[in-house]
Length: 66
Image (cartoon, rainbow, N blue to C red; front, side):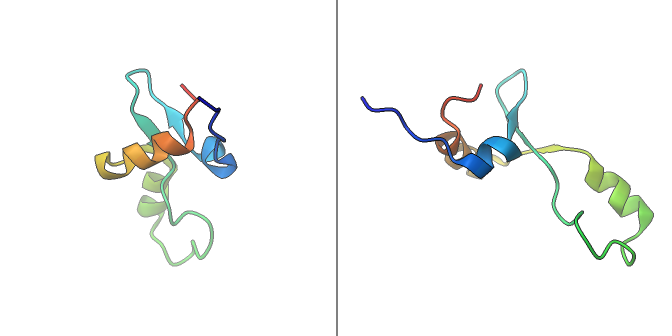
């Protein structure tokens, strides 16, 4: 069985939790932040989990990361 190539941008964007779920950063934190409330930008700092619908796709992109 040949090795699978890891998707380069995905290996930088996703990490695994101790239980095997996939962590990701939240979106909408890059620019045009002045019009967004401070409360909202604070909440965007925290990481969150990838949804179950997308988890399988992400696992295929990063097959060797644990």
